[in-house]
Length: 230
Image 1 (cartoon, rainbow, N blue to C red):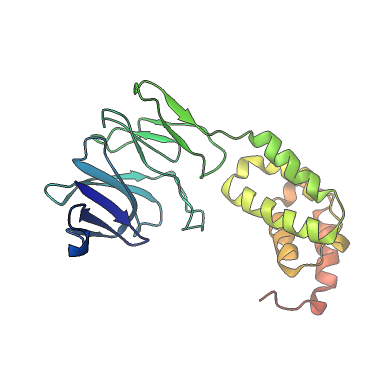
Image 2 (cartoon, rainbow, N blue to C red; image 1 turned 60 degrees about the vertical axis):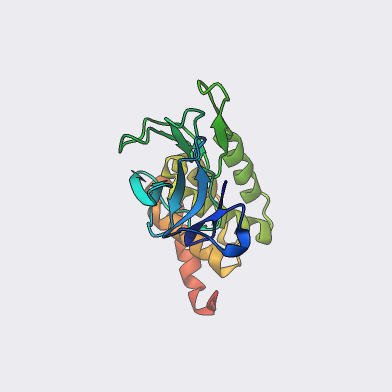
C-alpha cells in the first residue's frame, strides 16, 4: 500500500509498511498530488508553470504520462491557495478549478462558469454528475460596492484594493464597478495603496467616468505630500 505526500515543490511516494525507510520515488516540480481511484496513477499541479498545468504520472513506471495545460487560466498571486484535483469514479475524467478534462485529450472537455478560483467540487459516486461550489457574482460585487459608499476612510481604502483586484481578473465587471468608483471623493481616500488603486482605475476606465479628470486633478495637486506606501 502506498501513501502520497506533497509540499510546494515535490511529491513523494511512501510504502505504508516501511515508513521509516523513507520515500520511494520523488517527483520534482509538482504539488497538491492526488491518487486516481485505481491507484495506478496520480495527478498533481505543476509548481513550475506560471499558468495552470496538471501533470499525470504513472506510478508503476514512475514516468510523466501527460500534461494538461489550461491556457485560459491566470495566476492569482496566491500560490498557497488552490482547489483539489478530482478523479471521476472510473478515472476517465478529471475536474480541477471548474474545468473538466479527459486525460487522453490535451484540451478541456468543458469549462464551468465560476466566480472564483477557489470554488470546490467533485464527482457524484455514480460518475454521471458533478457538484460544484458556485458563487453569486452579482451579490458579491453589489456587497463590495456598498462598502465604497460608506464614506469611512479605512473601509473605502480596503474596498478600493479589492475592486482593483476584481477588475484586473474580471474586467467584465467594469461597468458595474466604475459607476460607483467614479462617485468617490478623493478626500475619502487617504491610504497610499488605495490612492494608487483609484488612480489605476481612473486611468484604465476614464472613458466610463465623466468626473475622472477632476478626481485625478485633486490627487495630483496633493502628490507632493505623499509618502511611499512601502
